[in-house]
Length: 257
Ligand code: TMP
Ligand code: ASP
Image (cartoon, rainbow, N blue to C red; front, side, top):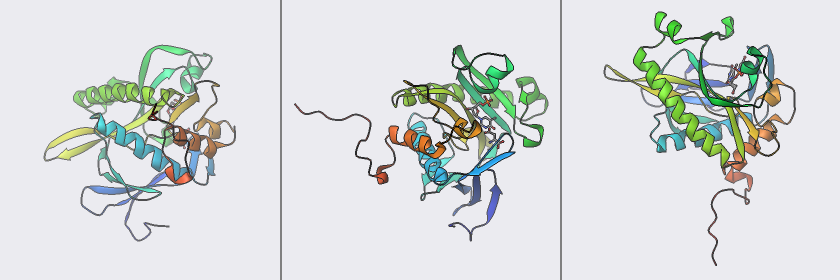
């Protein structure tokens, strides 16, 4: 495994962080491991890490282009990317467009209803506590973030949602909901809030626009099978995966008449 000689900084369930080549940088390694329900359900999905590395690279690059600051610097190889070291805000920020998952469960609703407006929720990142949902009151009282941080996180989350909704729609995919994390990037004594972690089918709900077929980690959570194949289809539709002999690239084609 590449990276074995580097200093390990942090090992999570699906990723490992190693010390980067320069101060203030880290290497983010994408594992094939996947877990659900606070890691009570586990599996290794061959090739999943490679796909998530590519998909997250693509999305973070596009977000950088529209001026959303992220921790992403560049992809290094099949499983690794160079990122900026940030101070992670201990919140999972969930943005929802369609009724699904824990929201449907909490309110006894059917999955699939378009929400009247996008909903942003915060969860406190702590597996032992099962990532409890929290409000701004808790975030401020326990000093997990400042009022300015929360404002920045909210406006970035909404911009990311608008952008991703359009990006996936162009690939025939409905962006149901997703989870993102943010970090503080220190520049002197000024901190800037940037998007961190990853955006991939592990952290989104993605449904085929025509058939409603699930193309995300719910295939693993709900034992639907063909998990990696679904992630691969997401990558193919986004027009990435050129090494897979992708000669049916989606995207604009110049038609000469
Ligand atoms: P939920 O409906 O289970 O609360 O999930 C909302 C979104 O957040 C969904 O796209 C899956 C994602 N998610 C994670 O990325 N990690 C998690 O630990 C959980 C519970 C959800
Ligand atoms: N990744 C989380 C866990 O391992 C949960 C999930 O995404 O469903 O528990």
